[in-house]
Image (cartoon, rainbow, N blue to C red; front, side):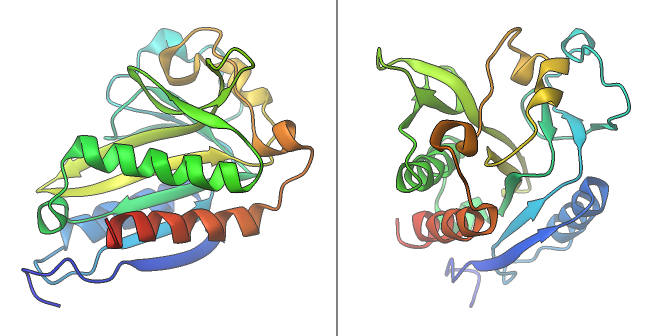
Length: 215
């Protein structure tokens, strides 16, 4: 690969890892990037943690209790990561791939929508609120099932997407998810009755890679 070619994306297999360890690796990866560094997508699951984006406000963290709270440099507000959630860290050289931040977010959302549809969930975007929401019978956005928080430095993205697959959703009740008081949050298992975490992670990762390699 050379600096003029976007090249193939390296897709890392789904693993469980501490949030702070993943955050440190992401920062190091992005800081060390050069024009020939391959783009990567990491698929991970984290132990329970609340993360605060740059727009977070203290009043949206209602009762963290014994769950750790980590300030990050990503966009967005407060969210929860925990067991049963697939997190995809999307580390792309946007200039090399000719991507705007808007297009990056749109393609990440589309990959989530496609993976959820394949798993039996009809979902949609919500204007002005990045992420993915299940459709209601009125064809309006309902409970949130996936969140997006991105950071771009030196033209390269990191952080990414979190899709709720088979979680304990109670920790979301201790925050205003993404800064929206009372926002309902759901997961794939709640919507369909069952969910295979590893299979969903593999499918989501493959779709993300295709959306950025082929588009």
